[in-house]
Image (cartoon, one colour):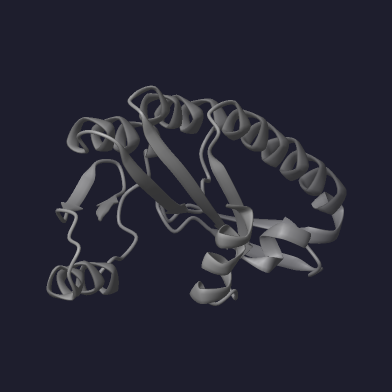
Length: 166
């Protein structure tokens, strides 16, 4: 398990036992958003840390430029890693079904703006579609498994989605 934001924060050695699983689960429980993410740098660092063949599972909102995400994924791929990505988005981010004015605050930078959601909905959804298409295309080139899921999806159901793909 590797946790990161703009750099690797914690690294837990792979373990095939339940004893080794406990520190990983505790590590997941203590994660809090702090700094702006840099998935490319984290994936490059992970590629250096993880030796030999391995399955790398990335769980992220992937809210960064596709090109930088794909650079990191390419590094893992060319190092012989099998990559599965769980792209987690809030349902409101995926369909923009809410209307009215909204104050939007970045979890990472704490910057805040007010937007009219109805006025930007169509443009937002088109940009989201283009963004997701670019990610999917890049992941296909590296034979990475890509699962787009919502924050409300149970972990078991997301993993079940992956098992149906294999």
